[in-house]
Amino acid sequence: MMAFLADWLNLLIRWAHMVVGIGWIGASFYFIGLDVALKKREVMNPGVYGTAWEVHGGGFYHVEKYTVAPKHLPDDLIWYKWEAYLTFVTGFLLLIVQYYLNPTAFLIDPSVAVLYPWQAIMISVIGLIAGWFVYDGICRSSIGKNTGLLAVAVFALIVAAAWGFTHVFSGRGALIHVGAFVGTMMAANVFAIIIPNQKKIVASLLKGEAPDPRLGAIGKQRSVHNTYLTLPVLLMMVSNHYPFLTNHPQSWLLVALVLVIGGTVRHFFVRHEAGDPTGQILWAPGIAAAGILIALYLTAPRIDPSLAGLKVSDADVLKITATHCVMCHAAKPTHDGFAAPPKGVMLTSIDLIRQHKTEILAQAVNSNTMPLGNETGITDQERKLLAAWIARQ
Image 1 (cartoon, rainbow, N blue to C red):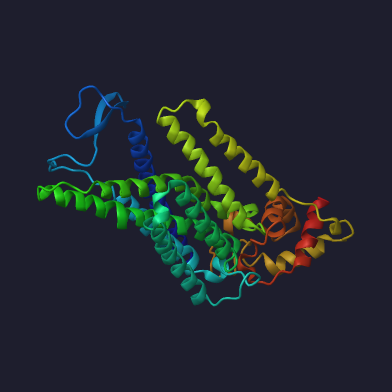
Image 2: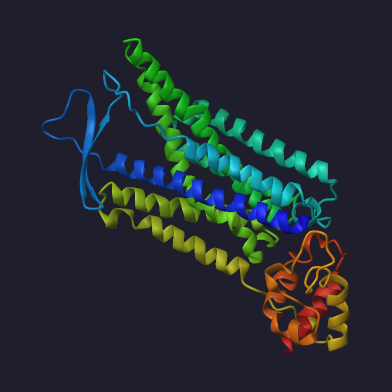
């Protein structure tokens, strides 16, 4: 019953995370698109930086953006912040339910680092907090005044974090933490920089003082960072479905490629919305395509020549799966963490094993995702025997 309730809790939190995350991303993408689409008109209200005419859902909209702020604020000013806050809260709750409550299964891999559950959780929490302070310090330093240099520094920070996570956590635990690391930076940008700066501007207006334009510029800088990081962080959040990413021996390098691919794709769309000629921004999808080709090359399956001489019988395979798989992948799992076989996959007979050979190849042969956390201590030789048997099917 506890496993059943845990699954429902996981599902509901994941659903909530998706809903508020979509809301945050939608608002972020909309305002970045709006900002780059603003145009100066012959006649504009005092203090207006630019305006945009938009049509959506059968209606026409006229939007103005002030260079700093209007002289007087309306009573019904709309703030965009709760989507970001709730995305972080639900994401961290999901991290707790999925990883902190099951650290030996999802977070710890003894072949990477031998950790006690409390050590893994502490590394996780400290890593996320430290990431924000290092990132914020870089932005506040002289580096933050140079856009190109700042982009390189933030890129290096995330890749360094990815390298670190891959040397302490399981493959899936490492990449989900890269996503959480970046997501924490993004949410903290809203909570600690963008909204406080906007509140300071509002406070100045209410006092009849001229707001500091630097506050708006800093908020805009962090907002731009968030939009460029969105596509990479989304892929990190679904990476645990793809063991060729999570269990690659240089998965941190794949993270670097994902940052380049996602960032350049996002840049293309931002500049396209700004009205830049397509020919001038085609370099961005070109770099993204090159990044994808490199990732394909790095993750392409390699044939192990040592498999050719291995003799494996059906009985050998049944023995391996009985020892390492059926505790979870049976009609009634004996593993405490599962009330039903994950994804409905059962491996209790040779016919069922043959039916799911593709999943076994991906999860237990080409990667060490399964068994989870290698709780059963499957050996490399046993993985090779599975590979040899599958190759002959």
